[in-house]
View 1 (tube, rainbow, N blue to C red):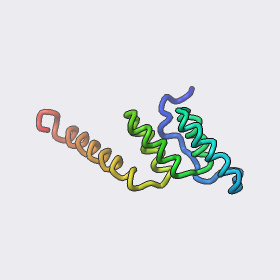
View 2 (cartoon, one colour; view 1 turned 60 degrees about the vertical axis):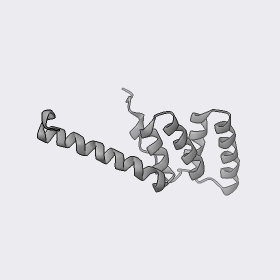
View 3 (cartoon, helix red, strand yellow; view 1 turned 135 degrees about the vertical axis):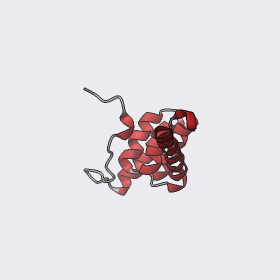
Length: 110
């Protein structure tokens, strides 16, 4: 059975077959072209494959603009962009704290 939650699929940082610099350049150019033409998923697949942090960050920004925060967080983490991932993580921590407080104190006391 296929999981509905694709947000937490493990993605390795190291490619199984290393790409040459030339291959990465060609793929990243194609990914940028696809992104600019609105083919976000296709561009994302290329950027994940090549580890292109600028492309991954732009895809994350796209997801933020379209209210898909978890997918944006995944892209920012893959891009190692702490400046963009840390505020999302902080807001998730605050949310979890509120949920824990609600569980502990009861809904009426929050």
